[in-house]
Image 1 (cartoon, rainbow, N blue to C red):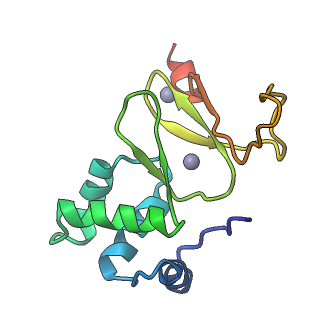
Image 2: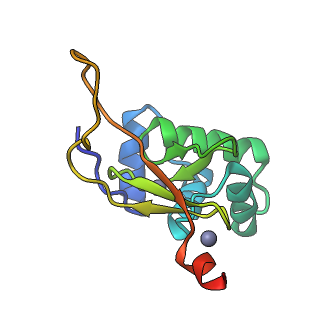
Image 3: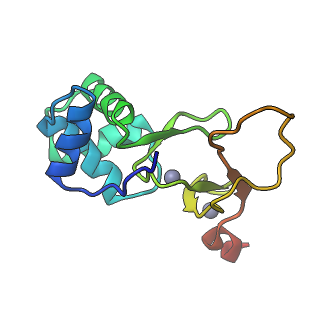
Length: 144
Ligand SMILES: [Zn+2]
Ligand SMILES: [Zn+2]
C-alpha cells in the first residue's frame, strides 16, 4: 500500500475521510490545516492552541476527536518520542524523525526504501519500521 502525498485541499480530505466513513467538517479541516501549516509535530495541546486562533469556539474534546479521525483515515500519524505527549505528523510518506534533545523539536528525515540491515529473527515478516534519531539540531548546535 503506497501512502499518497497529503495535500491541503478539501477534496483529498473528503475522499480520505469518506473512505473511513467520516465526513469532512470545518473542525476537521481546521485541525488538518494546523498540522500542514507548521510541520513541527505539535502535541494535541499545541494543535488546540493553534486551531483556537482561527476557530475560537473549537473545544479541546473536538480537537482530540478531529486528530483521532485524521489518524484513523490515514491523513496524519502519531509520533511518540520517549515519554513525551503524543505528537502528530501529516507526512504520510515513509520517513523517520530527528529529535533534538536540546530544544525538543522533531524534524522529518528521509528513510531508505529498504529495511536497513537489521537482523530480524528467521521467519519473521517485517511490514514497516520506525526510526527516530536523537541528537542536536543545527540551531542548537550553533548556540553551543
Ligand atoms: Zn534543537
Ligand atoms: Zn514526521
